[in-house]
Picture 1: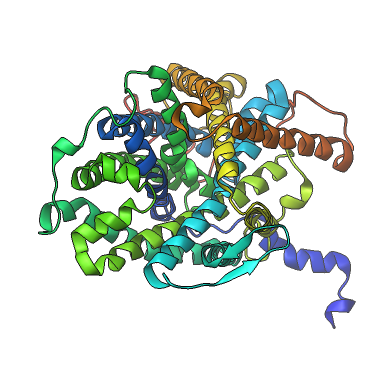
Picture 2: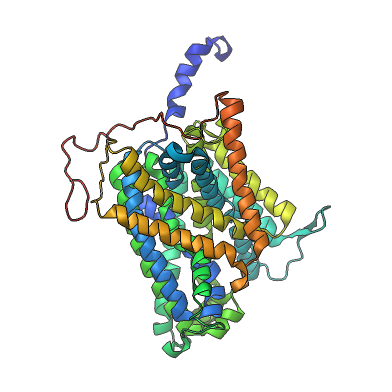
Length: 508
């Protein structure tokens, strides 16, 4: 019988299994590999931060932010155990927590989370293209003139190719992306080891701790400046929560998610203290401030001499990891919120490889359009920071709300009661940083009110899509508070008589 003769009902039965659930092929180690994209945030912001407020001040800010991220990872681990079959990570947890109180907040959190991850692709692609051009094609004249007034040089063409490659590596199954990430992750680790040990071991390096100060070019005692820099750099340290986005694809969603979250947060805490310390001590704050983008190349020049291009390969590998992770996380965020009813239905579909193909394709298309139409996407990236921190803050608040509203939902990982006030404190700290950051964006020279207004405008699109889903696609009455909920069942890997460890709060 030909495929055309197969009854419709029978055909759907044959294809349904591959589209019903995401494929569980990952371990917690794969989650850590995806979290290795976070040093990209350090590479992108270290030069500007150190030049403005000094090395010790920058290290202190990153240390505090990493410590807060570690605390938040424990909250996200509990919520991940509540929803082991939901994809989308903290954006979905935020939606589940807030929908009972004001449903649009959940949609805003999900869309803001997507902004923070997905729209970084454009900037990461351009920086990767610039590194490749400088290392291998410094004298090229390749450029495509566009009718809209600007041209696409080689870095932009490389960026478009890299965005398409990141899409392809994710579209054809998460295992493929994880395999590539392991290779590039190994290269990144080698590069980080060279950066950390090189200033001590290389005869060409000259490490001097006196080059690290508390001052930079502005007073470190202006609290508003400190808070605004925390606001700007928090996205580079909080991002270890990406491990939760793959909960529905881990072999053991409860244990693997929790291990990946905590291990990656601890790893990033160490890297964000040691790497700036060694790089600033080797180059000095003035050199880094004057070369905020290519200071990494200067560091490898000092350590490896004429072979510095070998040191830049791991940095390029890190950008590849970052772009693959951003694509994977952004796509799963859109998919997860669509499945929860927070945005258009079309994004809540898995392809035959068990990944959200439509959401991934949407990510790729939007970022390529950003490069072609805007030419310089940095303003969009800065605006997306508001969305990302809003999502993290709402997810932290959702922990408290879920404890109160849904106490009977099984929690294979259940923290002790002390974590409720800890979550309230984290919510207050993040909210304060957002308020100061959006009111004083010009204190660092990193942006202005236009970026803040753009970020708010993009977040409002989430409300429009949420309204469209409710009224047009689902044809239901607008519910500002959604009470009917899909109660997740206790995961089969957790014994029914599991107990809670009184010290750590973990069930055994």
